Length: 216
View 1 (tube, rainbow, N blue to C red):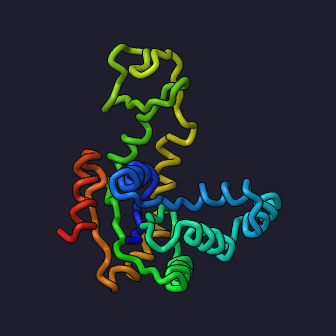
View 2: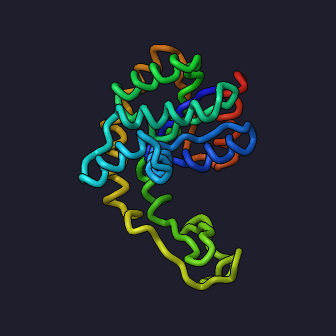
View 3: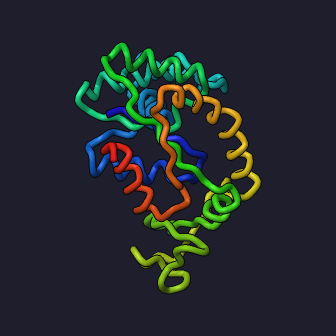
């Protein structure tokens, strides 16, 4: 099974992809992670990407397509994949179709995690983590049991991502709407788009995704 998870940053795509990896043996293909891995491994496509990034330029769709193709070849036909962060544009959607067709694959589902912008701002700006072990917390939804002490490791240092602020979150939302939302009609025309309430409890979101994949 090959699926795309769509949604703005903070919608919970990474969390749900991890669950699908655990429960279904699927593999999450995040373009950022794959780019870094290809550069580190020194593959032909990775070397191209490194040269472009070293020059301070954006990696082309052609290079990203090459990296996705290489990764799919490594996995083999029997492994289901979750595309996260790709495609973002109509040309990338076309490229993905070609990549999959060449390998005898096709897209089964496009699942959008729908969010409420104001609620998402609260969700993201309230996040913080233990500086020692990385355990996640939230100002409103998940405070440490003992104030200032990590539940998991007992650490007392916490940190927040510098880009977890309202201005950045709203900019990311606007970018998502402008760039990614236009690819939805392409997949809607094929009848493979489903929407899930991304603001619901993580377990409820996981169950809704499972129901879609199981055809319920």
